[in-house]
Amino acid sequence: MSIEVFDTKEVQELLKAAANLGSQDGSARAKEITHRLLSDLFKAIDELDMTPDEIWAGVTYFNKLGQDGEAALLAAGLGLEKYLDIRMDAEDREADIHGGTPRTIEGPLYVAGAPVRDGVSKIDLDPDADAGPLIIRGTVTGANGKPVANAVVECWHANSKGFYSHFDPTGAQSDFNLRGAVRTGADGTYEFRTLMPVGYGCPPHGATQQLLNALARHGNRPAHVHFFATSENHRKLTTQINIEGDPLIWDDFAYATREELVPHVVEKTGGTALGLKSDAYKEIVFDIQLTPLVQGKDNQIVHRPRAAAAA
Ligand SMILES: [Fe+2]
Image (cartoon, rainbow, N blue to C red):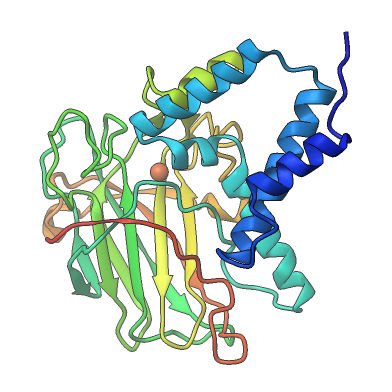
């Protein structure tokens, strides 16, 4: 049985009424988007002949998604966040903006407020017996290839259990463990002394994993480190690096991997003198190239609710 009522006058008027298109009040943009999304949903219900049981399962799912606080996680898992990157990349090409370190998704686990250090920051505040020391360092340059002074590089990553501080369900980490911010000097360099992260998995009983299970998809990410790089005269960069060798690099449930963002991991010694927990350590050099402002503005700055804490 296929029932198609979408094009009827009754349904079209219902959609207009639901979005309050007949009124001058309210937000014109909110009305436009509501009308479009609701229309697309109604059309899909007709075309896929979705049953009331399926619709109510979906409504119940949204309630669980909110209760679990996982809407942003689901946005990453369903490729919505990647899609926004694809659109911004296309916008750059259209504007003839090339070069610069590639962007990739922010994810939902940034926390604002990490203390800003000059040049170097040791960010492993809590002990983690299963994680070896890691140095991530590099130089921030501008479009002309010259070092950028006074840029702030922020990074955040998971511990050896795949948990992020501030969001750790075990409560084992201080707020800014494995989160840091470094201001570059005249040479443009930054350095984080930290511990090797492991990959992250969606909460196994959360709404995101529930949907992924229905799609026969896993909810895991390869080991990675997130970055923001900001500078007054450049556009903000949101990116990540993957830890070379992780088997999930090309099977990331959040689609964040990019070829240019898998720097080499090099074995080094001399860590004790640097204050690391062992002499042998791993090092990743990740140079960051920023792109210039467009007509004096960051044309791609993203405003979204972000967690914040005081260090
Ligand atoms: Fe992450």
